[in-house]
Image 1 (cartoon, rainbow, N blue to C red):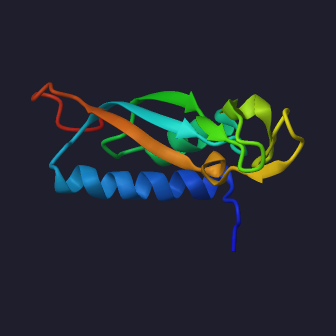
Image 2 (cartoon, helix red, strand yellow):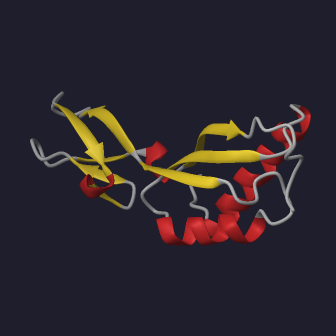
Length: 128
């Protein structure tokens, strides 16, 4: 069964998992977070929700770097390879321009943590 999350739920899940990892690694403050956003997600809504829920956490004030979803895909029908971006998709569907068949691109709907840059300043123990 496949379902999509809304921005609020997706960001809450991502932040919750990230905070647990930061705590385990004893990271008290983060300078930047790189996220790859799937096509169903609005960048503006993701940024707003992230900023809203990270108050008083090690993520407060972190720069959010947002990458758009891209992938290489070989059509299972005609065998032609394509570089896919959000502009090539209708929701999660890619329609091959060579043969016309549609394919669901499952990873296109994900919100993925790509990288975290912790603050290295030892005098800065956490949010103000």
